[in-house]
Length: 72
Image 1 (cartoon, one colour):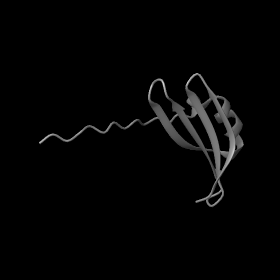
Image 2 (spheres, one colour; image 1 turned 30 degrees about the horizontal axis):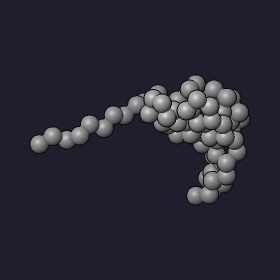
Image 3 (cartoon, one colour; image 1 turned 180 degrees about the vertical axis):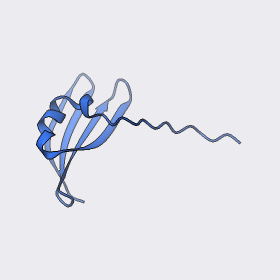
C-alpha cells in the first residue's frame, strides 16, 4: 500500500488526517484525540472526503470493539 496525505489538521489535542491509498484507490480518514485517548480510522467515499475531514465524528464507525484481558 502507498499512502498520500491529502490533508492534516491538529488543534487542542485532536488530529485529523486524510489519506489516499493509491494502491486500492480509496480515501482513509484518521482521527485521534490525545486528551480522551480516542482513535479511529475509516474508509470514506471519495466524493465525501472534504466533508469527512471537516466533520470526522459524522464518519465515526458505528461498531466499537473493546478487548478485555483474558483472566485464567
